[in-house]
Image 1 (cartoon, rainbow, N blue to C red):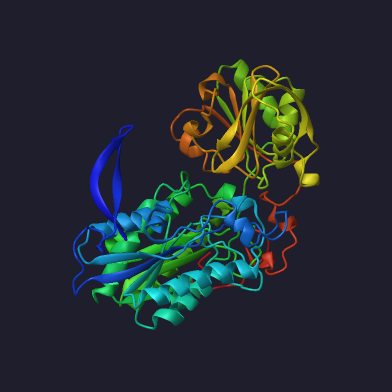
Image 2 (tube, rainbow, N blue to C red):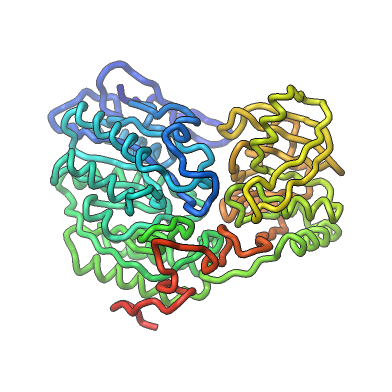
Length: 530
C-alpha cells in the first residue's frame, strides 16, 4: 500500500497535505505502475547519542518503549525529512515508495547513552530482510541523524549504508538526510551516493532536505546525474550551544554553501558541525560535496568551504554564559525593568534532571515561573502508585537523580494541577507551587521549543514571566525568533560536566581532542590558509 495525495487542507493558517491509504498498488501520485516506475526503499533509523550520559546502554526494549516500529505506508510520515521526501516523490508519476520497518525512537532521546550492538543489528536486519522480500529496488532513501553511537560499530550510519549496498548491489543509488550535528567522515559516501544535511539550527529545513534528496535520487536513478563527491574535515570541535545558525559566522558559512549551490548547477554542499558528546573517531565538523561528474569542482568547493570555516573558527568555538546564581539575579533585574518574559535555557543539562536553576529561583524568591520540564521518573512513579490526583496536595523531592552534576533534590510543596499523557510520554504531571510557579515533570529529557508545546491542560504560557527550558538552540524557534521573549539567558553549569562547552574536561576514549581547535594544535591540512 502506498500513500496517495488527495487534497490540501487548511489548518491554523497553514496548508498541509492530507493522505489516504489505498489497498491497490499505486505510485505516490496514484498512477498505475509502468515499466518506467522506479521502486524506492525508504527507512529511518535516527539517534543523537550522548555517550557520556548516565543510565546505561539502551537495548531493544528501550527502542520499543515509544511504540512498535512503523511499517509500510506508516514509515512515509515518520519524520519531517521523510515527509519532505515522500511529498516530493509524490509529484512524479514514476516513483513507487516502499516503507521498510523503522523504529520510532529510543526512550529518553538524546539523553541516552551508547546503543547496544544488538539494537543496530536487530533493526537494520529487519529492514534488510523486508527489502529482500520486497524484491529489487531502483533506489534507497535513508533518514538518519549522523551522531548515532553503537558499541563496537565505529561508524553506524556508514555501516548501515554498507549493509544496504550489499543487498541492492553496486548500481542502485543510496541517499540519506542528516542533522547538521552529525559526525560523518568520508566513509558514508564510499557506500552511498549523496548526503543532504540541514543548513539551519533550529532545523527549519529538514522537510526541504527530504525534498532535495528525492529530486537528486530521481535524477541519479534516471541516469541524469553521475554523483562525484569530495569530503573535507576541518579539525574543529564545539558544543552545540555554539552552533546557532541564526548569527554569524555560522549564518555566513551556510550562506556560502547556498551560494555555491546557486552558482554551480548540480552542486550540493553540506556542512556537518559535529556532535561532541558522541565519543566516536569521526567526531567533529565536516563538509560533503556532490557534483555531476566533476571531481575538480567538487574538490574546489570542498576546499573553499573548509578554508572559510577554518578562517572564522574563533567566532563559533567559544562562549561565556552566566551560572545559575547570576542568571537568576539577572532575571530579577529584567522582571523589575518589565523586560519579560525571560527565558532561562539550561543548555548543558542533557539528562534533564538538574536542579541548580530551580533551586536558585526558589532561593531568590522569583514567581510566575513555568519550568518545562524536569526529568523526574521516580517522582512520577510515586504520583501514579500513590494515586495522587489533580487537586491533591503535592509534597515531594524532585530532580537530582543522576549524580553530582544534577544538584540536590529540591523539596516542592504545592498542588497537583494536571496529570496525563503528553509529548509522547504516557505519564506527565504539573505541580503549582510558590508564587504562581508551575513545574512540569516528565519520565525523561524533554526539550520544549515553542509556546504551543507548553500550553498543556490549565497552563497558559502567557501567565508567566519566566520560562525554564532544557534546551540549547531549538527554543529560539518559539521564544526568540518570534520576538516573544525580550530577555534570554543561556545558563551554564556550576561545574565542568558533560554537556558544557568545556569539552577538555571530558574523558574521551576514542578521540584525542588535542587534535581539534580550540583545544590543541590540529595537524596542518592542504586547504588551511591561516
